Image (cartoon, rainbow, N blue to C red; front, side):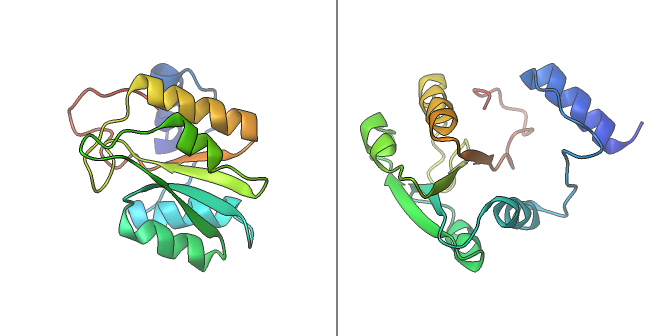
Length: 146
């Protein structure tokens, strides 16, 4: 069994997702490479990508390199709350993806299950990708699943 087989089994066990170990994974050297691969795979010039503001600084650069348009959705301090109305109003016909990481970088905010549901339902309704940066997924802390 190879690493992609183990990853496919993990995705099935942890998230209930059926993924093909031969076609549904890209093994990368780090977060920046993986994020760039995801962006360049799904973004065409002029496509909009929603980012939660403040955002991890390299996201904007990578989106712009792909000739995409970053669109910032503000999180309200001090608890960095996601307001569904602001988020949903950020979508346009050009929205292609939403970038999500939890805990959020740089705020440390952990999105609630209710917030994750709003994000996932919006992505499904708007037929856009949710690109998750899961760099802290296996750090030993239990969190809400994406």
